Image (cartoon, rainbow, N blue to C red; front, side, top):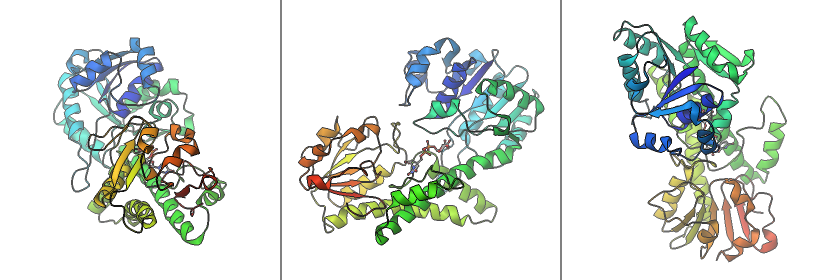
Length: 425
Ligand code: UGA
């Protein structure tokens, strides 16, 4: 089938490559001409595993352009995957969706189906229907189709969805979407058709629940430190109950990224407009902010509150592994707090680059001459580091915010090791 995806961020790229690899022909539209130029040269403008390989492999099924007009007669199915950032007050800025929809309306020739993958406030897609009706006589259907992929495993997640949620009242839209998703072989019970509002709510409720789960485990981790319990054992004990499961129970320095912070704020805002206070989600945010303070305190406590002129090797900057994205990354706040207290930073991340941070080309270089090491992302390559690499740290101490080295025996080397949810070992 011929389809068009509008917006080439993480979701847009994964959708385009995913649909193309399953046999659809995908027209990818983005206003950013620089991005389009790169994509036409086979380059992916972000770091996302497998994307490089797939763009080359399926180039015959992909067409990249900034000009929607040039492809408007080739398809009538438009997936929108543009950004919906937070406004100052926590509400959602949907202006990019309107821009995309305006372009579709302007160039659509007969029937069109607009499928919204972007995360939008509840009721937005229904409003959009009215907006479109006032602008054109052409029949345009709207469907909400929230995306649940994670950055860092975007393509894998897109191709193997645990569920597909479609929110629409149009039977024609349902039929088209069934055809598009047929090659995914999603079992019937995991193909959920509902109304627009419910589909939108599922997305917010899912992200908030996951954020809540992480904040919960981080709070329990804090209590473990006080009670000499071991969060890793607690995690195992919890996860053996399949009502709880083993996912999103990794304690750490809190959740970040372009989704959880934005979506938790948004759902609180939506609730507020409806005179409801979402106390659990508010608490999850509060705990998340506190988690960073808690981790920084571990470092400053070790140095009796004086880290002035201490050189700190930071391992990892991205908001999670396998992405170069640093949006709302806990690393940024942690580094800022350490700098405010007078510490000097030497950082390393395999993919994320931040101009204002003193970065090095390898772990080894970042560790060289540093007083202590602070691990902020669980990149796979960090797991390979030999204990002896840390022997050169002047103060022989590691603060591991992601439990990367939890199973190592640093004591043997005279190195002190602090992590989250377990006392010094
Ligand atoms: C999240 C959701 O997991 C996706 O389902 C959703 O589609 C996406 O948001 C979105 O709305 O677009 P993502 O933000 O890419 O995906 O990353 P996650 O893997 O969910 O991680 C989010 C944050 O939680 C990261 O900072 C990560 O380090 C942290 N995290 C995750 C933990 O601290 N502990 C865990 O156990 C898991």
